Length: 100
Image 1 (cartoon, rainbow, N blue to C red):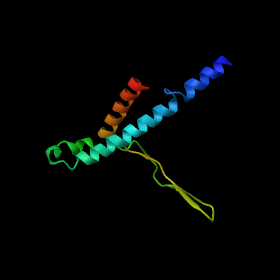
Image 2 (cartoon, rainbow, N blue to C red):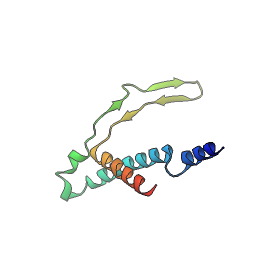
Image 3 (cartoon, rainbow, N blue to C red):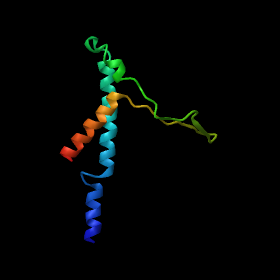
Image 4 (cartoon, one colour):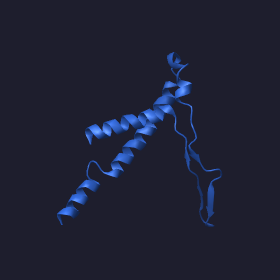
């Protein structure tokens, strides 16, 4: 029972896998948004195009379509990070390890 209780607390507590994945995803989104925002700053005009250039890591060539006659579902997946989103992920991991 103690093992189950410990598993429950570690799985749903502060340092669970779900919270880590959520922090990494939020860090990537905020880093990408910050990069897009800083792209419009004139003082950083020479630096930001290289930091916000996307690098396609994984992309489906054509989306998968499922037609159910009532609903048509189209699914696609693409992972194209940029340097600013990677910096956001690093900051999110550091903050997660420090505060969770």
